[in-house]
Image (cartoon, rainbow, N blue to C red; front, side):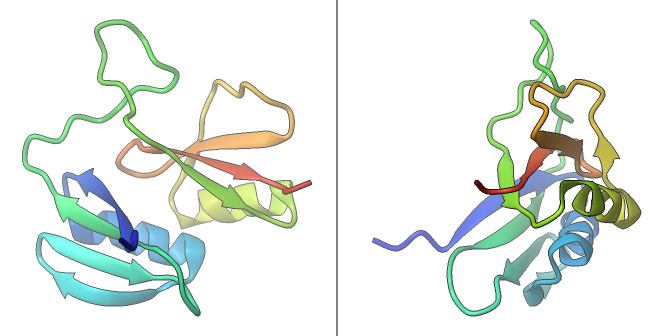
Length: 120
């Protein structure tokens, strides 16, 4: 078995894929109205996006009775402040709640949390 991608649901697959393309600089593979794939340079698993008409934006941090995040992405960076600024310029929002000093939690345009961190 080979893991090929993580799939994120969104109200608009193309819009969310465009955000992650700006953020990561990855190449677009499939580009259909409700399904878009991005491929990492070289090899490895990519990201896919599908339009979900019943999509409910997750809440971060979790609150009882609200839509929970089901997964999040961890993205290694060289410079946390520069990466955070790049993410915001690409369309992310820095989450108000930051549980760790050495990680920045951001929210993509569809509300999925992702973490930027500098590997040790």
